[in-house]
Amino acid sequence: MKKSLIIFCLFIALPVRAEMDPFSVYAAEAPAGCIDAPLKEGDLTLPDLIQIGICNNPALSRGYMSVKASEAAYGQSQSAYLPSVTVRGNVSRDYSKTEDVNSQKDHPYSGNVALSWLIYDFGGRSATADQMKSYLDSAQFTYNATLHDTVLAINQAYFDLLSAQEVLKSSKTSEASFKKSYEESVKRFELGLVSASDKLLAKTSYEQSRLAVVQADNTLKKAQGTLAVLLNLSPDTPLSVSRPPKDRDITKLETNQTVQELMETALTLRPELKSRQSDMSAAKHGIDIARAGALPSLNFGAEAGYNDNWKKHNPYQYGTSVGLTLSIPLFNGFSDMYNIAKAKYQYRQAALSVVETQDSVRNDVWSSYQDYVTAVDSYDISRKTLESALENERVAFASYQVGRGSILELLTAGSQLATARQQVIVAFYSVLTSKANLYRAIGRF
Image 1: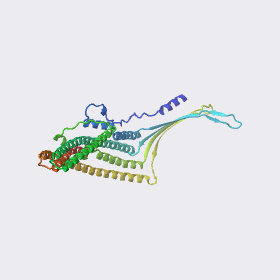
Image 2: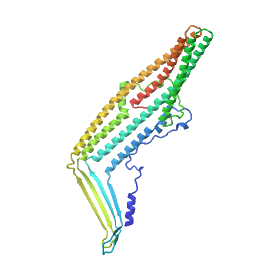
Image 3: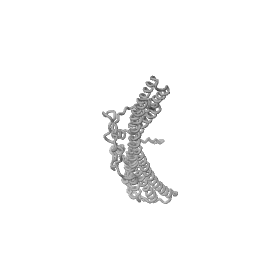
């Protein structure tokens, strides 16, 4: 009997494996199919970068752990429907000595098994389970919102990097143009056709163009570092990225909805709003939990015990008991009353948070849509400005060569052309960035 009791106690003392899922609550899965940027040949596309970011971004990984913890909490709430069994065992060695009496040594041991099962609690268990399910939904939607933010951040960093690369290239082109103007002014000065001021003005513009190249190179390096960090890579990691085609299709939206229709769509898609709605549902179940805590509960209990001290004069003992326990809370210092009131206020707070989030979503869509429309118009205007600046610079240089134009006209035309080039680059990628922002505001990738 002693051996059987010890084996049983050891069995129930074994740790429960974390991978076990008797209630089938673990549904969320980590991103699959991850790729490693340094191992991929060729240029990285935007989908490649997004895939790397989803797999490696620490914020997303932290959000995923939050979802798994919420799943575990939901599973824990399901356990309230099952009985709880407690096993207690005791083995000891006792020694006693009384004056003028022989010493006594005992090796008593005992075992006890107790079962407790909540039969009815006026919906407290179901409300708790529903609340944990709502919190799980909220955690999943919060994870989705973090996912959207990560995708948007990678989009922005990708476009910033491409823009910085093209601005650097444009700055070098402008540097070459100003160098050409400077060399022309030196040649004409040496021929006595212009004064020294022409040469000095041209040199000043040329040196300023060189400074612009240095600044553009600095912007490029920082843009590359920003993108690398978003991918959980070192900022000095070299990244080779592909360029999107500069056509009208890439700047257009994939929908013909009006801004009002986009706002309504966002109210059904935005994960932040769904998270707040899940929090409101959880708060509503909290009221039921608080009310159930103030009502009676019925428990079933069963217990069996065994004692033995290995003495013939005092043989083993065992006993069993079975019964129902009805608990009726009568007074606990008004705690239940305030607990119910607190739950109601928390529900109202959650409901107001939903309304506030709805207003914020509408405003995000409205602002992002206006930014997109402005960016498209700015891109169209900047392209026309560039065409005009190219022709103006060509005419100004030709006029200066034949002595009909001044150095100020030539340098002004060159400066306007340099500005126009950069404006086109910035405007194009501003369209793509504002488009990504609008999709994020709607609740899409």
